[in-house]
Length: 341
Image (cartoon, rainbow, N blue to C red; front, side, top):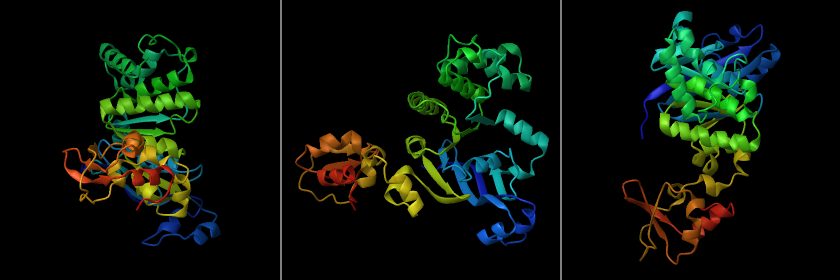
């Protein structure tokens, strides 16, 4: 499916140091040696990406990789040193302060690792806060806020204060607050990393449920590759300020572009990520098939059925059109981590 482009950045740099501007004059780009010689930090280096409408786009990397700096450039919370950023085709870097404030109030939602709830306000008042700033009347903002509180599963707790909530519940308040203005794009910077593993998994489930309802354009930052492949439509892997590879979770596992990316993928349960479409061979000449299976099924979901059959299965697309076949041998290759092609 071809998505409408919502947000782009082209050749974005963010340098820190006394000589940052002088290193990016004309068409020249600083080398690692240039940065070291001038004591300049290359937080983001020549980053380019394109995010489609309704896409969950994950930017991931280890601490210091530049992922959080990049997302702050994309939302213009910090100013890039060089490059171009567009939002719905408009030059984000050319916007005035007033235009930028209006954009953030009406079209951008943000959630960060630290929930930043106002401790003296109730859940309802915290969620209402962005609409209050916009001057929305009380009845309208409270009605809208209650809709979002219900959506994130906190109905009945609207009069609680933040210190009366668990960490996961506080994060839900932050999510509701970021969505109350119905933003067109949603930035989430490691929103679940401070939560316990079980609560984190629950919040990932909640996140996917919300996205199935709301269909937002999402930029999600994480250092956790398991989280990235569970949530993402596409992933940009960063290292030392540069984007190493942009691909779907399946493509990252099947075709890592560098040793660095391969290290991230080597311990992933491939059968939970790879779909039958990804592993099917185009051969459809078998004398008989055990049946048809949807190409969107994950290998883990279909493994028992395929391994127990005496014939290959035909793999079909969403329209029922055959696109290839899978055999028990192919599934076993995936399960034991052996290359199947």
